[in-house]
Length: 284
Image (cartoon, rainbow, N blue to C red; front, side, top):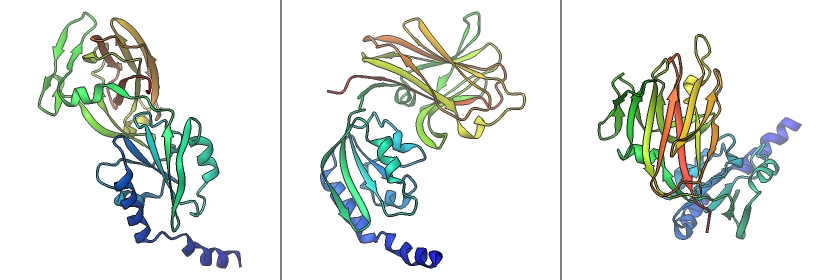
């Protein structure tokens, strides 16, 4: 009887295409620059194809707790009647520092509500964008300070060891990142990304192994990642077999600060890293 009841109930959770289209029309009419849509539960992927062009949609394992600090407003598009939707857990992870704007709106089995994101930190420095635009210096550096410049090809930097440093999309522990792809050159040598930064109230460096390399263990060595601002350096180690993103909190950036990101690993095999370095200011 329980199985029969479930089979009879399940169709009632279905979302009609007309409801998706109604949500899309509302979003197109009311979205503002910098908005984002967050899916709840994260696996309700079909909603993506109805989002208005240019409006980003976020949904992956762990996205409930994502700070989404680049976005001042968040549209939560929920399907609360889905089996194992876990909306209570979603609320616990999502709600801190978020304030609802207006009332919840219903479209059949879809729920849409807008929130002010109290975790918003406007990004004013983005190493990924600078690398993608060719506005950084990239080079291989040996322990004696000797540098081998990497040449910009128009889309990425090609180094003398055949490795590429560039702006790419990669997945690390379920989450997609637009990041700087870095590959350790091996031994005591390191690959360096250097640029001049605008003023920012804070800075950070987040890095992790591109996911297909994270679980490698045999003969692999840890990776050292360093953020240096005006000669002051902070480092962290990415352990062998680790599939997570790790974060360094850096200092405030003065106008024209010299920023360098270093990456090295004794054995370069499978040491391919996704790195996100930003400078942010306090939200107005």
